[in-house]
Length: 114
Length: 114
Image (cartoon, rainbow over all chains, first blue to last red; front, side):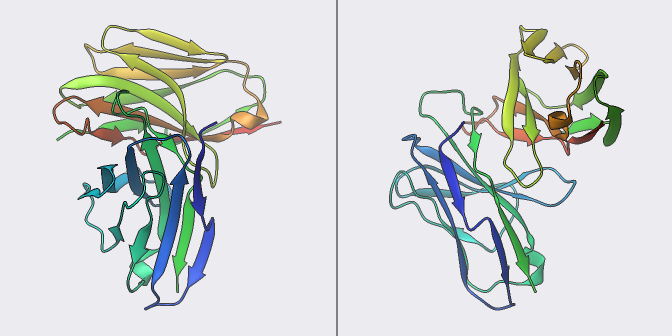
C-alpha cells in the first residue's frame, strides 16, 4: 500500500473561507499531482509538480493554488471557497525514473462548501 | 480528441459470479493502459498495467485484456466477492508529451450482492 496521506478526509466549510488541503508522501517521489473528481465522473488533473519549487497547472482550470517547498509535501489552497468547489480532491505521487503513469493515490479529501 | 469510454456505467452481480468490464479508447499515441480499483471514499489502486505489446495480464482473480488494434480493453473478474464492490477505472497513458498524460474513464460501478 502506498504511503501517501491526505488531511482532512472530510471538510465542510462556509463560502468565503480559506482552506488548505494537505498531502504528504514518505516514498521520496519527486512527482506529485492533484486531481479533482466529482461523483460518477472521471478524474481531472488540476496541478502537478516535478519537484521542489516546480508547480504547473493541469488540464482542468482551477482557482486553487499549490506549493512545493519540500519533496514530501504538496498542499493545495483555496483562498476563498465557493459551492462550486465542492468535490473530491485526490493527491498522487510517482517515482522518478519510473513510468510517468505509475501514480500512487492518497485516500482523498471530500470538500463541501456551503 | 483523446477519450476513454467505459461500459457498463454500473453493474450488479451476485457473489461468486464472473463479470467483464469494457474500456474503449481513442488515445494516441498509446503508451499503456491501466485498470484501477477505487473503493468508495478512497483513492484508486492499480490492478494491472499493459503496454502495446501485451494482450493479457492477470492479478489474482482479475484478468485484463488489451487489443491495441481495435483500442479495446476488458477487465474480467472471476468468482466475485463482496469486497469487489467498487468503481473500476480504465486509465490510458499517452507518450506524446513529457508529462505522459493520463486519460481517465468515468469508471464502472460494480456492486456484488450476497
